[in-house]
Length: 405
Image (cartoon, rainbow, N blue to C red; front, side, top):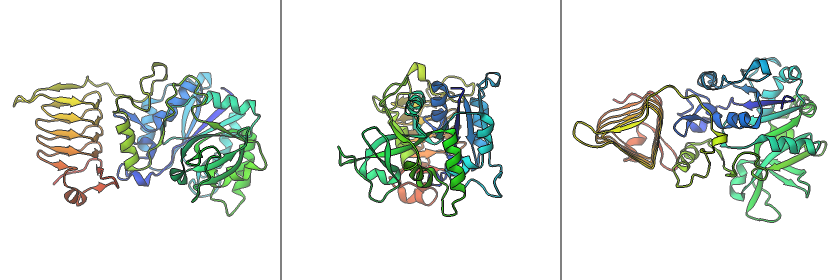
């Protein structure tokens, strides 16, 4: 793997996740009680043996950089291993990154310095587990210029993806980014073959493609819209189906783009199913993150005699449920739920305090929020809409450090 360089695109604004992204980049949004979204991509790299990693940041990156410093300073530079944050440096003109391809084009000097033969390009804002080693081996065996990871999705959902057609050898013969009428699979009219935004390039092919794209004034500098369609007829471009050769990771084949409040909420709720669709419990594929030194979570009775209870929920370190009740919820570190409060179907980020007799239902509470006693959130949509964002499916979002009147 020393001949491979990994680039993680982590500069996304994530505007559809506002207000959760008002002060942090999308890859830094908390997930599953103790993780950040980017932890899943970096964990995949760690277990796949990819340990030369550049994280390209841009939008409100402080929270992300702090998380990488605290949780991912684990590689040994003496062995040629590293995770390095690369902010925009305007090496090719006075502009920020203007697209996924442009982000890498502006850092071509890092590719040339790395002497890597292969480049793995990943997104830092998806939830999934994948061993990249079989895909890299597949890329080498085909002597490919580009290999694109893909998966089957319902046709009605394919408008959000890059959709491809392949021949009998899995060579990509057509590719269209976010088509209005996605092409269906020849053997299943209800599904399309969609790109996952995971690419493996031969370095020379990537550099050549990026340099040509940069000279095209009509280009939007995007891999799906510009780079891949232009390479299909000129280079060897192959698809690699997600989950077919899983390597050392168990075959749950779970992948989610958590780019909206509703998709983020649902992905968290997936973790509470009797058999979660994504396996976080595979011992040799542990999801790594930064975890502060905190005491164990506990339930305790209150002064009134109410017992603290949690049912079918994820409860992180430092949580105290003192006479309150938590059901079907995901609770992050240092949260306190006080006497008589009920939390149902909700996600609470770090250091939230729920006052006595509060009622929280179907909501996301960002960190450092102190909810006054008797407050109701997620009960009255009309009242909630006066103060908070409500998603299409009715999830109420309370922003970070919100002060109640």
